[in-house]
Image 1 (cartoon, rainbow, N blue to C red):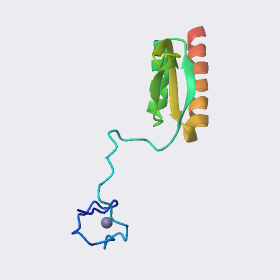
Image 2 (tube, protein in one colour):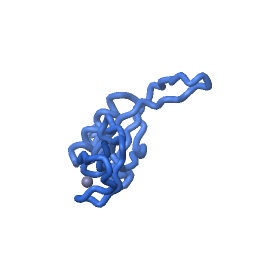
Image 3 (cartoon, protein in one colour):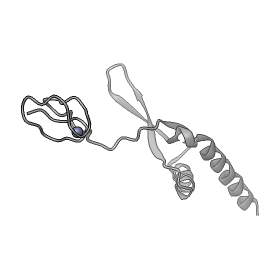
Image 4 (tube, helix red, strand yellow):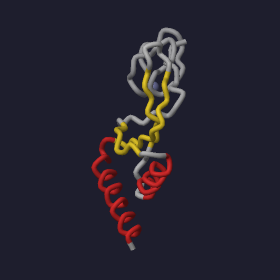
Length: 117
Ligand SMILES: [Zn+2]
């Protein structure tokens, strides 16, 4: 059975195009992606020295509506095994990198000031 790849409608044999979308019909629908993918690239904004620093920075960013993905730095060995390194890297959408950097910088300054007081 042909399917429309856009609206997923099923058509009878012999139909070539979807009447709604004007898309060429396909015999097999492509597999649905398993995970919701974010189409924007995430770039590293901070590599924290420990998990606590990473969590604090993450909270500051999330409070401001900046999505954060935390990654442990991973290095791939020649054998293809992942070697986990004890580092906490925060990544944010590339378009929010400047905002994220500024926010982290400000929160650090605020932290230093309160530590002195
Ligand atoms: Zn369609």
